[in-house]
Image 1 (cartoon, helix red, strand yellow):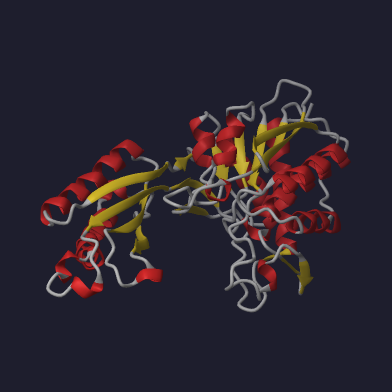
Image 2 (image 1 turned 60 degrees about the vertical axis):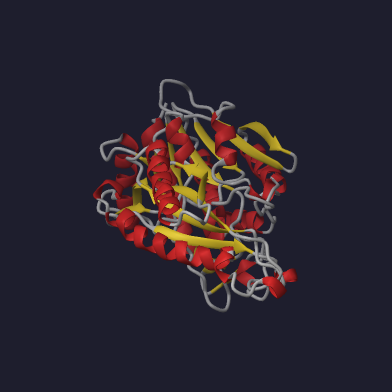
Length: 407
């Protein structure tokens, strides 16, 4: 019988939250993972992805003859806690605390809570004295958060979108299958959308205010407003196209940013203005096909506004991922969840990205199944129910038993 130690799990999660690990600065958290692996007697593989950033892979070697299971989780947090709108919210700081049966702190739900559950699941199994046939791997990786270098935004803090897991799988971090504990509200996510990011540039003239009279139509910001109106006509067509739907979920497009002009020099009109779109793509559509379709849209804009110099650039192509309903990992999660929670798990399709994108393309079938999303408490911030963490860790342990087999 697997027995999860609540206090031990909370301690591990607390230690992880207490180590700041904003994207680009995850190495200290990876070193903590090495410490945890060594305490468990796991084989440790250190992967130095770049300066200040690393993956920590811990391997519990099996007796042989069983299938290997990876638990994968990212160490980078969506925020640093230094953002002006988050500085006063304690649950968005890298300092964990308990209140009313919940654990608060930056990254607890996305996804240090799940990483702590991986460690506790292996601890609980080892406490029983069981020997598994297949290997269990815990991969704590850097650089998963949805962000990328663009324009003046350069550096490690902008290198996300599976940067760590892409390094992981090309340096020995592979398994027969992977359970990825992204926050799914305890549902089994068999597939998720990918993302394509598009920059649409609109050109104009660089004019001093004093000489702009009668030349307002040359202002790239005002031209971009017209182009944006045309983009807003196109978005419903993408979202309603059956070819862009997946398992009952439609695609979605976000106008994520507008960039143009010089706030410190408003006496000039900008020579160009950029619109940035986040276009979600179903896992059944190749990124090459999606790229071709959105650039066809841009060409149509250029024809519609012939004097505006409209051009487009695709700068993120992060594919979605899916796993077959009949896969043995799905069955193992279903059974373990029902045993622990008393009812079978639900199913979901999500439009967020996960490292399943990179894993599946290296032949590692991956299921996203994890804790709640830890939606922000208005006053206290990011949090998770501790009882939910305990049950999730127990599910993970039972899944490892089922998948890897007992020697």
